Image (tube, rainbow, N blue to C red; front, side, top):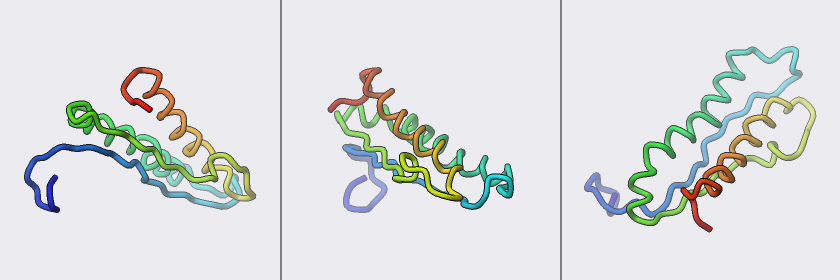
Length: 103
């Protein structure tokens, strides 16, 4: 995109910053909320990355994965967030190891 219009241009960067979280005691968290959280926090970022990889490769672009500190630090009633945060960080390393990301 150029200048905010819809004309094609070089895609030089993708910043994956999607994230939602549901808190509370694990026994009270509804499975549908946990699925939605995983869909947004992990599968959503994977889908966007897969869709944009050809354009990023062509432009020698960069990918940045953002995740919450909640993926690294355990806090009360936020246990459900750890899986998504850790998964996002793991995706970045996997892309680097496969040669899809540089730097």
